[in-house]
Every structure is written in C-alpha cells, then in structure tokens.
Length: 361
Image (tube, rainbow, N blue to C red; front, side):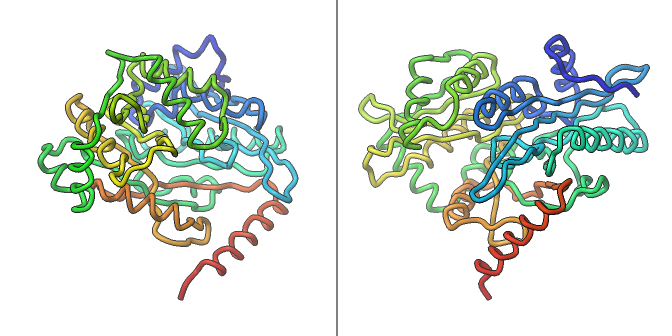
C-alpha cells in the first residue's frame, strides 16, 4: 500500500475520487479542506496533512486530516487533529466502493496507524473524527472505537426530501407552520444559486454575519470561497427581506444529492414579532425538493448533559427549533483519541465536574 500526501497537483484526482466514493461528501473535498486551512491559518496555525492510499489497482482511500494549535482559558497551547479552532470533529476517511469488507477493515487499520504516526511526529495531544450522515454508505455503528477511539457520539437531524411536499409540510411542528405562514405575509424570500449568484447580495450576507457576531469572526478569504461554492453549484444562499432590505440569510452547502444547513445571520437591529428563520428554512426545503436533492441535514441534536457533551440552554433551544421541521434523528458517530495522558486527565476531570454541576436529578 502506498501512502501519498495531498498536494496541489493531486487535487483533481482527490476530488474525482470523492465524487465516485459512496463514503464521501463535501467535507472530504479539497474545497472544504482549503476553507478550513484558510479559516485557521493565522489564529490556529492550521495545516493540511491529508493523505491518500493506493495499491496496484489505483486509489483506494482518502483521509482528510487537519492539524491546528488550540488553547482554551488557563491551558497551555496544544496541537490536535481537529477543525475550526475549537476541537471540531474532522470527517472520517472515505474508501472506494468496490472493496470487500475485509479489505476495508485492513485499509482503515492502515489509515489510523498513519494518523497515530503523524500524531507522534507532530506532538499531537488528541485526534477527533466523526461519521458522515450524508454519505450513501452511512456508518451503522461507531467503527472508530475499533481503532482506539473513545466514543463521543451525538445525534443529528436529517429531512427526507424524497417525500411528497405535502408530507414534508405535514411533518412541521404546528407552531412552525403558523410562523412560516406569518412569515410569507411579512417577508419576501430570495434564493441565490449557480444560476443567479449575486456578489452584491452575498456581500450583504457577509456583512450581516459580522454585524450579528459583533466582530469579524473569520478571514474574508473564507467568505470568498463560499461565494465560489455557490457559483460552482456547491452552495446556495437564501435571503429574507422586507421593503427591499435584507434582514437575514441562511447558507446551505450542496454536494451530490444532499444538503447541509451551514450558517445563518440575522440583522440584530431588525425588530419584529414575526420570526425570520421559519420562513427561510421552509423556502430552503422547497428549493431543495424542487431541485432534486434527497437529504437535508439540518443539524446537531442535543437533549441534555452527557459525560462528553454539556449543551447550554441555547444549544437545547436550537436543537428543538430544528426538530420542528420534521425529519429523523439519527446517530452522529464521533470518536476522540488522546495521545497526551495529562491532557486527557485534565479534560475528562473538567467534563466530569461540568456533568455533576449540570445533571439534574
């Protein structure tokens, strides 16, 4: 088995493999990896250590892998295999479709041995990976534990867009239907895709993103990449306006036959008793349905404190809002592997302290 680093000259081969692999989605592509690297380049010294495996039949697997240096309050700086500068879970490897189960096991073993080797070489404190719910080949169990990872699983919400539109509407929570209908009377929704991408409108989304956050949260370069995704058919922007002025946006990632709710930004100065998000999300669902998409991942589902995950009241509220659009809650398999025992003990002690403080009985 030959292991090769992902370099610029291999981008085309890598992306062709991702298009063909039933394990891969947009998170595996060089477009996403370049975005993550640009996102954390200055603040987290993010580097792309992704690699591919090949035998005499050609490429058999790709492993997206990013290293970044993170530091939480009162902690020393550490290196880890993660994304987004906050320990975000990297996507699990993608394999070629025609491999036998036995062959897949052997290849995954070799991949994670390479990850361990790179962790040692780069003094990495921990590595975090997650499964891919939008893949054709969805994981049926947390396979990461086979390779030394501790279970860190959660859940996510997937809307089945192959259902008739009236069934999708019927699956909305009663209050959501009420707010969608109110929103239709008060606002206009606008969809921007690769057929009508508008840089001026996209810049309004970017500026609203900064305004809502109260600061510039990430490099402008990353927004430019997102605009290119729209032009390439890998993104869509839905805006809501009133009297000709935009009050909010949602950005949706697109790849193959599936979509992911990426981000939202509302104008904090826009005062109304009619919520924006409900009518935006329904407009997104209608557009995705009309354009042949089959799945829409609307996002993480949290229900209460777990040993490895302590959601805030706001987190729980966001999960509840997303479930109101129907769909099915499914496992989001995740795993963490510690290479630094002192860091492991400190992190697990802190999680246990938080669990005890937040666990109501």
